[in-house]
Amino acid sequence: MVAEEDAMTVKAILEAKGHAVVTLGPNATLTEAVGLLADRRIGALVITNGDRKIVGILSERDVVRVIAKEGAAALDMTVRAAMTPKDKDCNENHTVNEIMEIMTAGRFRHLPVAKDGLVADINMDMPILTYRFEDMVAFGGDRSTLGPVIGRALAGIGVTLSPDPMPGEAIFVRSDHFNFVRRGIPAVFLWPGPKGPGKAATDDFMNKHYHRPSDDLTQPILWDQAVRFVDANYRIAREIADADTRPLWNRGDYFAGLFDGPMAP
Image (tube, rainbow, N blue to C red; front, top):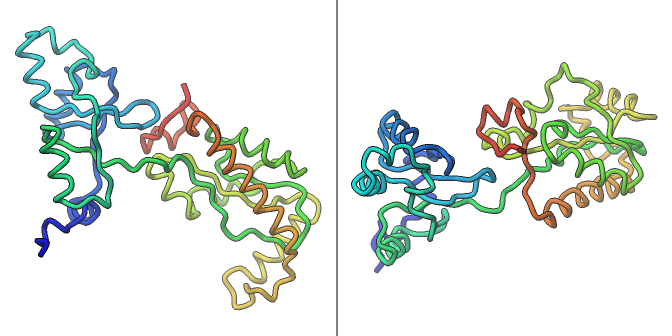
């Protein structure tokens, strides 16, 4: 019989203890790292590079080891020189027993939890497909390197990219994708645009049907436009998946700074 604590997963532990993690870049000084450890009253830092990939762990033991060897001069060294490089990690589906085996075999006391693969969020939410759209709007597209990707995808289906037609509505911070933004992940929300019949169709839907009983499949949906809309989103996702590097927030973007997202150089 498997003990209950051995069957417990990392996900269950994080849900009970919280997901907060303190990170630092590998080029920071050991002085900065020691100050952060003291301020947060923690025993280790997760070291991440510009792509937010885990490259190592810096623990109190690492700090003591390098100071014993180099003396006070160690405080001017980079974190990279003192950290334990990442050799193993775990994910939220590992059990307590499994991570204990990993740590015992590797003879280390800290094991980072990695959530690799989620590099961007392309939100497909409530497209109004009652007209043949001539353009699309990408809410948040100007905030990251997703912008040029979106432009190429739309050119491929013969439509243009239009600016936010209602900036006063602050739609970027009000839709489902914003939970990804809060985790530092570049995100965008795509909508058929206002050119041609677009504005009238959008106004009609929002004023007469949005969040009302009539917001259903009895609307005069043009299914061929749904195909075009999905095609645009597919092209965006495919280019992201095939790229050598992940999408990045534009340098100096407000949300990248606020939520510690990866920024372009």
